[in-house]
Image (cartoon, rainbow, N blue to C red):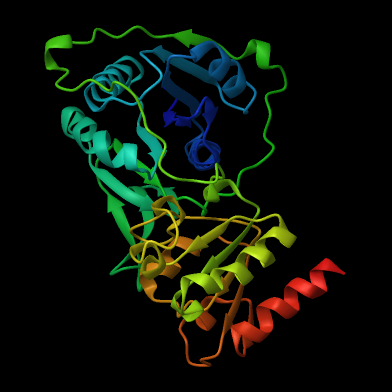
Length: 324
């Protein structure tokens, strides 16, 4: 009997999130190692469009659940549990995300499946699944051996590059509409709507280039030179936690363990010391450039390129060079 891998896709503002495609990358790896099939499930109020899109992603089957456009813990828990009952997958893969944190532990409990979070790699051997992840705020990398025959695993953003895997003939990929029995009496909350917090409308997790700023900028008025650099690069401005807590940038621009994880082609850290709580959120970046006047700043330990100098000299000079 073939092994089934079930990958769960996420969406936001009517679009599949990039981390969904990273989860499919992880799913393909696991399907190849187990000689199994990769199935993908999506819960949405726009299942037709998402179903067609996912069918083009080199999967063996798509399962859609039509249950509203907005996330609801109780509905996602029941629908996902029912889908697992239906498909009996050996492994369930999902993005490491705010929504996942909310409902996946309950799903794992419902299914009596172990839950391993924040996977950056895994292998399958005679003794089962071995998941690689980090511990102690990313200071140590280790493995978790899963002795159970089934498991739920969440995938760290930025560690699984998306590929151009496409189905030879998407029309031959079955897109199945799954209609689980939802116990409405057990749905204890109702999402009436979502309110967008102050934002420029740019999702920093989707950007190719990110310019990020830390305490080295000293004063809010000095952010102007960072914005000018970002404008030349066509990049959003993000920040470390102290900048957000000072109210200088909106909360959706925070990068790090208590903020967002990003994986741009280029990440420029301006005046950021590089505490592990911040660097955890940028490990998926292709190239990291650090500008800091302290040669012992931890940011240089993870940077590919570093400039040890006064940011108030370097940033305007870099902006001027880019402009010409």
